[in-house]
Image 1 (tube, rainbow, N blue to C red):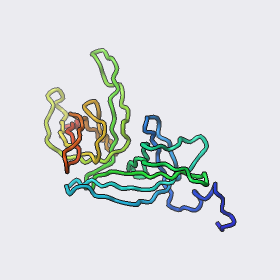
Image 2: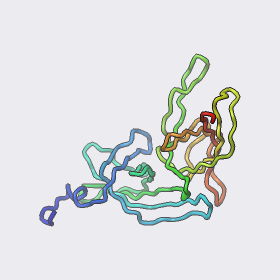
Image 3: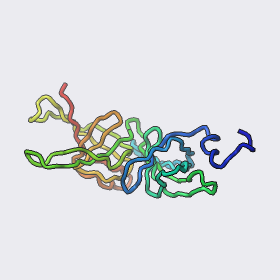
Image 4: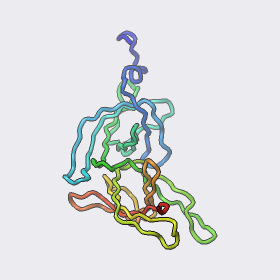
Length: 217
């Protein structure tokens, strides 16, 4: 495409060859919005602490296309990128050409071999024949960096053919999660939280114990 062929409406998707699909998740709730052609470059990376599960913050600038009827990005919204990483939008600017938004965002993750981008879900309860029962699960955070460490295994008395694993979940950042919640890995492994995730002390990452039920070997 030559200079004389350039148009403001087409420059974003035709010139750049490093586009990737993302999902825009409104901070106030609502369904994610798919944006198939977004572009970003990482400006800065900061390492926090010297633990085995080191926390890394990445700041990036994203360019998001403006489409008719699309949700406008806002500060606090989340972007889920092509590999499942979460970016929190910190500033939004509509560029003068009116073809895209420029968003500065931050991603916080754990730098360790077993860290994964997991989903946090909250139980939805309803009245059952024997009392309250879980009717379903609603995501409260679509992606947060979590590392899993096995603490112990035991066989529940009520379920002799199963085994419960007690694990320690370490989070890259503090999220709203407690005993009514569960963490789901990309492969579908489910961990039910035992306690509420609380702010860690200086130099420590937030962590909480959880249970996983599996078929006994």
